[in-house]
Length: 364
Ligand code: SAM
Ligand code: DTB
Ligand code: SF4
Image (cartoon, rainbow, N blue to C red; front, side, top):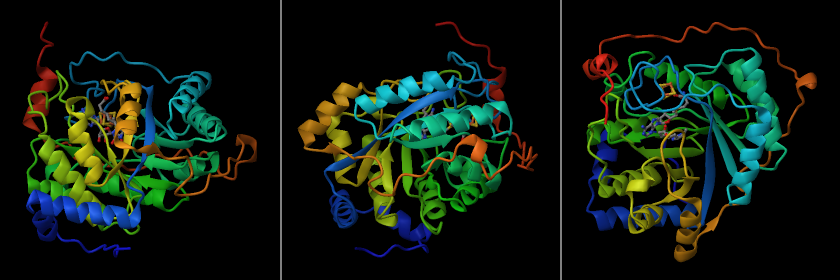
């Protein structure tokens, strides 16, 4: 096993990222083999349980209400609908369901109670359950843990410096505080980010410093390539080069040897050869299913064929950590506190976000 370091510097990470590709791949693949079975890939299915109409101004996100995108918004799905989708995901080889809600933060009340019931229901199907619901307090994280939540996804998205160029309605520290709230429970932490938002290599390294210096490091790290959606401030960003994705995955693997590195948004733009290089570089998880939250993803049958071709097998649920126990609502030890947490709203001006807000929707 190689050592897990929590003191990576930006300079060291930039040096790794810029290594000659063959050396970078060799180093990453070597570390990968010391910590993981290179032929096993964890498969998660995303489920957008509440879509669109979000109050935030995240420049990459088609679900932000203020931008003029073409997505269809939805109220919270029912527990029965979620159960049916989870069973479908299980039958196509997924070990984990990741439920996403277009919320700034979790609010105690009926909707959160419904989400807790969804968590209980999926855990009872013997699948790993993940939620990504925005910022949460420690008490809310404890309630999710009790319901049987396996992982909570909350991305840092970029470096602290570049984050300010993308989002003005919350701060980087809010993200770190939520991760810390999750970490204080038995729930595993899933945190990563996006490349292709106009950031430079220093920013990519800065994000990896922030993630790798967490102690413990996140159990999983999604690396998303920006899906540039028409109407968002980042609609004109150029597609991420596969070489950037490979370098980012390899560098993530080297600085976070134990983490499951997830090849996330952007796979529709990648060839199978490109994805295979990412797996060689240390990616060992994907999002499967024909949709991410609102944008397309490769067909699950194509993914399964790709795994067969590469001799890779989907990971069984609870391989890395045992299944959480579900506590029923009426036996809960935690109360809804109706907290009004003081998450920040820096509200500095981001020119391209302002422009996207005022821009009328162009008819195709
Ligand atoms: N609202 C919650 C939040 O922001 O934490 C959860 C859902 S949010 C859509 C989850 C993550 O999806 C974001 O942090 C971001 O990393 C990723 N994401 C959103 N839009 C994306 C896009 N267009 N391309 C790539 N990743 C995206
Ligand atoms: C993550 O890092 N990527 C997923 C998941 N966590 C929630 C979301 C990707 C969203 C891509 C844009 C969309 O489909 O709306
Ligand atoms: Fe809302 Fe999350 Fe999208 Fe930001 S990333 S606009 S918080 S749904």
